[in-house]
Image (cartoon, rainbow, N blue to C red; front, side, top):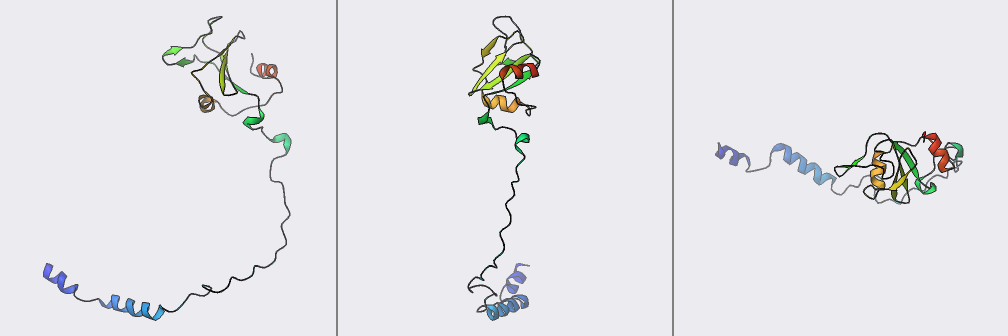
Length: 147
């Protein structure tokens, strides 16, 4: 069996010979457009510029245009095997989580606020849903969220 394989490998096949002949014929030929100076582009009238952004009343402000963001957190908040509770009233659920200036604050239903250093903005971004509105004042936002 190996003797037959070696015998076949002795010279190029008919297909290989045809390929080499055709390659030799095409060697000095250059495809059209290669090496020629580029054609001058046709002068087109400039398209009218259209503002494709939403109208200002439908735009959502970016994070750097807001003083902060907040979301409700109704279930108990467990951080590092410890349930977070309000130090003043002992509430452990129904929080408002506030994100402002790279700090996270928790606000209980009674209005007590405490900074939570174990949470960061990345945690807030992972858990917050889309914003359902923007408010001019902190109190307006509290009313909107039912606090």
